[in-house]
Image (cartoon, rainbow, N blue to C red; front, side, top):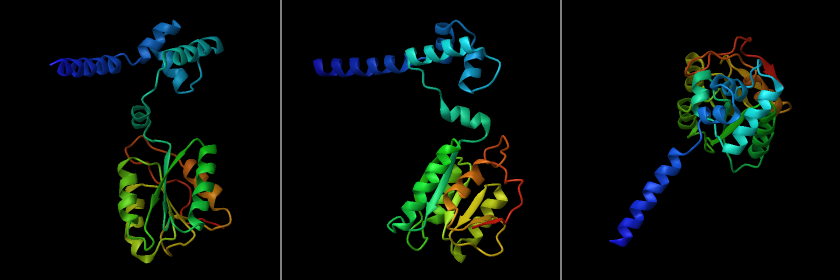
Amino acid sequence: MKKAVSERGAVEGARTERRAAPTMRDVARHAGVSVATVTYVLNGLPGVSAERRKHVLAAIAELGFKPNLLARSLRRGHTKVLGLILLDIANPFYPEIAAGVIEAAAMAGYQVFVAHGGADGQFVQREAEALVEHRGDGIIFTSLVEAHRKLVTRLLEMGVPCIMAVRRLRGVLADFVGIGLFALAAATQLARRPRTPAALPAHAAQPPGRHVA
């Protein structure tokens, strides 16, 4: 009986702790500003004095406020996340590519989700569809083979920005990046593409099929 009461108390305590998570309203009250001002600071928008911005940031730190990044991403229409599908993650060549892409993407304010396409590319479609489902802002494919032509074409038609790297599919109107400038070019090309406020970003307005080597 005591054990049951103890477990019940622990559950109720956990619920209380979750409910006690600070909100934007709490931050605004603590900093002595409006909720709109907190929103401006969180989104890095102009129109807030340096002094008020300082108070808001201090309140965020003191309260331990964690913004809902997913909700913000959905409102903006993009997630600042890129997908990188490596053909064979066991091959030391591909982790080197991943390291360069991650570094370049971070410089542009993006994160990279790395997926394993399989040594024969058997998992490429599954991983690409998962990245689209999670609203990635674009996908970088490495060493595509002819069997992937239909997949990449369909993604482009859906408005998903795609970049082919290392090996290209002839006739597919997507940017291709050769090995030389791969890391910087692939990440920055996707990061600079204009977005539309939709579940999936629109394909880039820049000319398709450009070859960067």
